[in-house]
Image: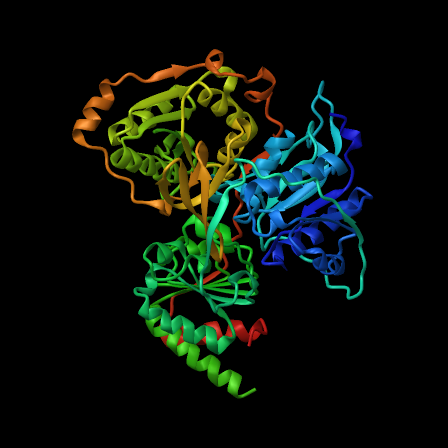
Length: 347
Length: 260
């Protein structure tokens, strides 16, 4: 492998139902930042059926170039045709860096593609930098410059590791949604658009989609919420989430929850914050009746302001809370809701 | 029908996390368990055994101590346990791990391979799909339901806002979610038999069609540049007041920070 041949930062521009996923725009933003350090460009790889029209949106968010792989076989996500599309793009265009969202799609596609092209893949990254590897010079070992240094939590969020991929290309990472910043939209920005179709011949690896069952949901994605009112087991019952919903409504927020609540069947999985749920970083995060298991903290500790209400003063949530209130949520939350309503009405 | 299940012995990060006085993780003091997603995968295989008489072989890669999870699997009802262990396999990243397991599985007959979606120590979710790629078979990740229909497997594949019902011809690899099922307990008779049962141990020489350059630390494309225990955000304020005062306190903070 001649590493010098590999140039540019590529991102997999995930779309579902021909709508660009938020993670695609976040990756373009982060890709652009990395590309500037390498004096390179950021290329979005758009894979799907009848998706060419989405290229302008990717350009508006900073993509310099969009490679469109458009084929009827790519209508819905399936591992094999998507892996073939992305691996073929890598073989033809030879990117130095390839970023993929750590979504239910990307965490299946990324490993399959990295195994096909024989390179390393670092999962669920929360921070990316360009730097030297080894970070500090080691006598007798070559220090390589302009390497992608990929940082990720491991061990259920207890440790943090920075990984490099010095001898293989592309340097591949999946990146947690909600962590990187998308750029401000520039209406009318144009990207170079290239269409590429490596040919799709169904074989035994093309699984058949028998049915698609969508969850009926009317709530906002908790990753987009500016204010989250999050409840844990301490809320006591699914019915008692009403007091959190009232608070959320008064303050213009959205209700989310901890894993314990999902495990108990009180709330749906898409509202779960944490290591096995979603990473959120709202302006304000209310942790109500959440003890703060390390897996939960991993998903919310980057929130700007964390307000915790818990009757157990030793709860680990207080270790990350900016404002911790030891007390009975059943008394405090309804009163708080009333006062917020009054304050808003007086404005 | 033959089913191969891959399992990993992992430190129990849920609740049982222990720290040294200097704040680093005390790994030696932590209990080890069978990785939860893998255990759900094993349970799914055992249900195929109950229903169709499937033969269930459990494979693990790890230190000799990892034999413990194989005995647990046997006590739950698996037919055979294979431990892949060798010093030259140590320090493997997901590429080298998947190469190792694929090299072991090439010695076995299989209709289905089931792995957990991800292990709770690494959380990468990579090894299952990578094994399938090395073996050239289809993969269905994030399985929340598994059924057999003739020579095909029908799987509910979970996504954030939907699931797909997928049908694949076997052989196929499936990665299981912990919520797939409630794993059974070991039976007393099973435990007794499991401790007498012979565990097959394979080393480097037993792996089929794998090059040395793809194994262990040396065969790992990714390398650790730096590792540290997580430094948490410092603790802020904590107050213990009566309910009305607590509400005033929060209101002051929300107004101070221009939230309302």
